Image (cartoon, rainbow, N blue to C red; front, side):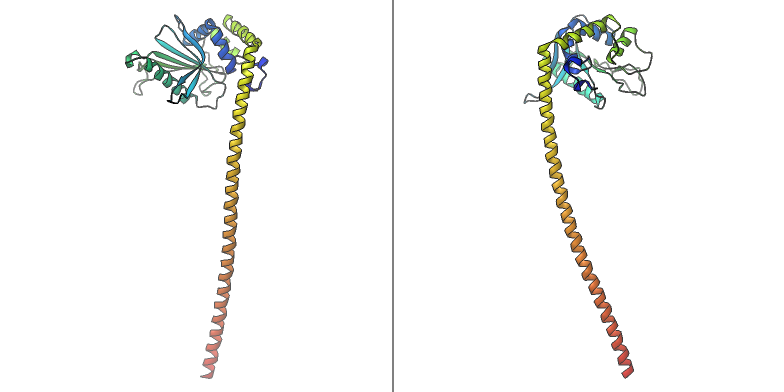
Amino acid sequence: MNNEQQNYEELTITNNFIFCKVMQSNPNLCKQLVELIINRKISHMVGLNSEQTIEITPDGKGIRLDVYFEDDGSTMYDIEMQVESNKNLARRSRFYQNIMDSQALGKNSDYIELMDSYVIFICPFNILPEYGYHLYHFRPRADEDSSIILDDGTSRIFVCAKGNRDDVSVEMKDFLDYLSGKLAGSQLTSQLDDAVKLARLNQKWRTEYMLSKIDIDVMKGEYERELAKKDAALAEKDNALAEKDNALAEKDSVLAEKDNSLIEKDARIAELEALLANLTNKDS
């Protein structure tokens, strides 16, 4: 069953709402998880904020980042829980990284002051099942020589639970198994599981989740009604075109009958002319 269809009491770490709440309310767990993924220590976390909205248009519209923070001022991090594999995750991650850079540039006066950035997508599936890796690290490289990395400070990491290679540590494999619904087997996943259970007991968050679901259902209903209106309008247009085609077909049929009548008339005239010619020849 999809997490979005479950009751609040059944939600797991792969649910976007639960993931955000657990990360925001447990900075140390968030820090440990990110350190496990990027394989290095983070000195200090600044501004951990769940679902931060970054404005990208003059009218205040923006994009929501699931879990965003900075370390000691030199690196930005955005961690996203992705539950649907049918989205274009590659271009989506590119967009997220670009808007993070746009926000950082607004604070600085020179490109050299742009902070390094990580966009981390955690996926209960594998974005590239034909390769089978659990972790995919992407940084810009030269086509001429893949060992040449463009040092622009950007990194995109996809964490995939459904890999089949022996390419990660025991602790990482335990986290990936936990994503897939298995029991926690390490200190980190046990702490994450405890945090998820506490989140499910939080009545304030439960209400917030239910209200968000209502909003989503309302928007979905409005969207479906708009689609129904468009479908009805298209159906009317198709009916009108069909009626027009039928009218043209009837007109063509009438014209065809007239043509046949003219052909028969011409044939009769030709017969009469031939008969008259024969009679004239006999009289001669």
